[in-house]
Image (tube, rainbow, N blue to C red):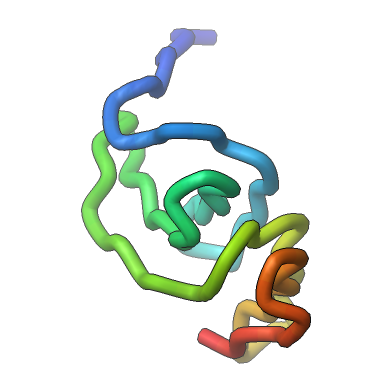
Length: 75
């Protein structure tokens, strides 16, 4: 299998989730949720709050707990 190393666009990647079409990565330091394409490029950045951790996909939305903000962002 081909291997792609993704490093551009992240400060402190912390959590990852697959929604059936895209890979999403939380960036703990930047307070963002990033959508990554199959080539490893960041194609969308969503601000989600301070210190986002392990995102979860429920079939319709991505839920991102924000450890530093004490709330959950729904994308």
